[in-house]
Length: 337
Image (cartoon, rainbow, N blue to C red; front, side, top):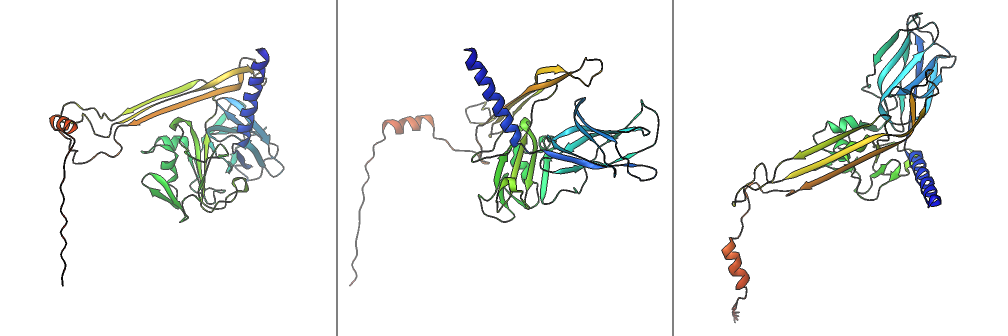
């Protein structure tokens, strides 16, 4: 029994490792310069943090440039730059996009106050320096849209046809020429996942990378959320009624009867002591979980605007009992001479 449990654990860990290896990651790069002189600041420490813990980091070169690869997509990162002789500066709310370079530059001001940190809120640029023919929609933006799911987000991209809430033609191509990927895996069927599971949705309408292969239309790349460092969850319930309150088939609210129930839960499973914490009180999660489910029921997807006519109960009972009928027909032929 123990051997089977160990084998199952190894298979689960291997599957998680393979799936995470297929997920597209982002790259963070930029420059660190002196605010007063504009000169580059070499050997400055650039640290990427999430939920108060360090994720990765690097240092600038002689020209003040830095580049950090393989960062998981997300929109809650904090990038901090520090160097001796300058005031520490951090930018919060940095959005890391899958398969894309994100540029974050620092302009350091001279100072010797070690306990002072200059906090700057990150602003997503209107024009991406590494944008190209692509559009990235974050999970927060999808939650604020009036429609649900990735299709509603994709149809907001230029060049994508909105086919009654679904993705139609991309740049005038035929149906079936647009491919959908979820965490790097090609989907051959429905790409519907719970609303709370979206981290990012990226739409590529041109210049498709080699990792996706040849596509004449476009690429829809969906990145799902992963385990969080802190336990949190959400519950969502929606209903438009659809309840008949009399024998005339009148509805309490509307005839569509839209019902939705969704829930999500995420957090760490196994944590170890953080070696970077000098006091040894912080813990670093190494294994986590993310669960999300969604149940949707619609009583009538296309209700009539003028109502429906129904057969009366007595008439229906008479038809069921006397369902036989005799029909007579006559064919008349006329011959013209």
